[in-house]
Image 1 (cartoon, rainbow, N blue to C red):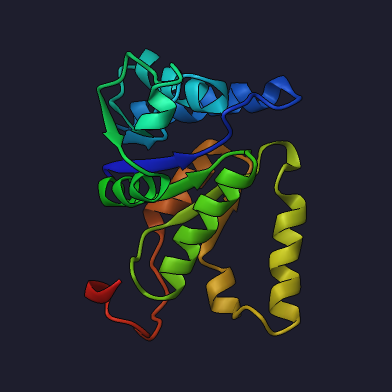
Image 2 (image 1 turned 45 degrees about the horizontal axis):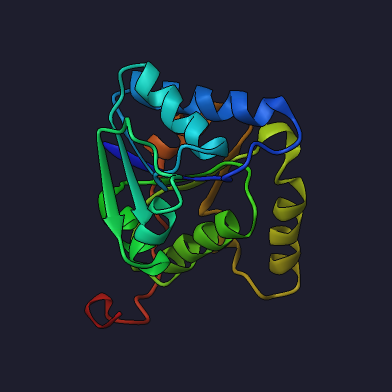
Length: 193
């Protein structure tokens, strides 16, 4: 992996461990010479992961819609800040730039981004590793829900296993580096999406 996209909250959450782990993830990416791609903001966990990478000498690429940059949320010290028109363009650009995805704690936006990447993988549109850094059990209920989806027949186990999970940054990056996407039928033509 040369570049990893990190999806995460634009706030810090209620526990200092979230910010600490975001910064640690950014630092670990930089140490392993993996560029960070993220949402381009200077606030919350987004700012923490970017600063963690930058402070360790890493390269950081932010992708932000113009309407958010205009609200002075953009991080001004990045390797490159790419301004796009819409949220949809933001996700598309982040996907184009990265070789894998990690979700840190976050809200609706983080979950939406994570599940869109999982859906694209399920459809065979990409074969990138998709991971959850389960900081302090933040995603425990979501992980349980994924198992319920399998148990109730709404999700194939092979697709559930596409989600790499750890509460340890180094272990998660190791899982991502060893990942091999399952062989799934290509239901649709990528060129037509």
